[in-house]
Image (tube, one colour):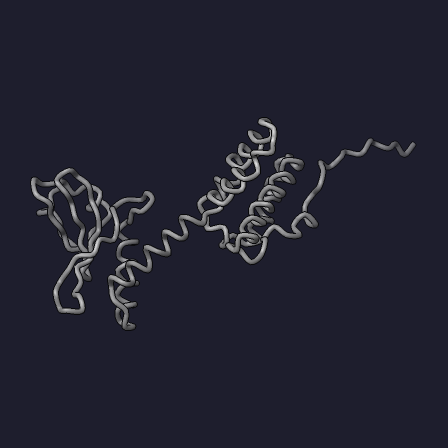
Length: 223
């Protein structure tokens, strides 16, 4: 789609996805100072035009366009602009707010459950047999990381762990569920002793989970 065909703003998702590059870089206004930038190589990103404290206008990059990591959809970019504007209205600066947001995002990325679990694994696996090491990381990668891997580990609540472990139990892998619970509890122990967490959300959960496969009792005849 050529930018001359744009009929309304804010820019619709179909427009954002289909805008064609031109020989020179260009920007299209989305609204409230938010611009959509398209480079000659086809890459797309978001920029905010804002006025600095000295009264001069400047550009602030908000991130690439898309749905991947560190990318923003149209709605996400607009929400970020609103947050920046709200902070500015309270006396902050656009640049300082953006830097604070970036620092918070970086901290969250560095404190995911998967990152912590791999740190725990690296510290513990040196004393394990090869088989134990393979089974341990395999269980984490198969069961835990797809659910909690990208979450900041301090944000995962005890009830979330309870529901997750009970769902594992319901598939019939009770013993493996118990092992996974033990692994994850130790992962949080690492966070606690290194000052990155104040409590362990898996503490005490074993009291409300199965500890061994349910046995089918033999049929007893009444005759």
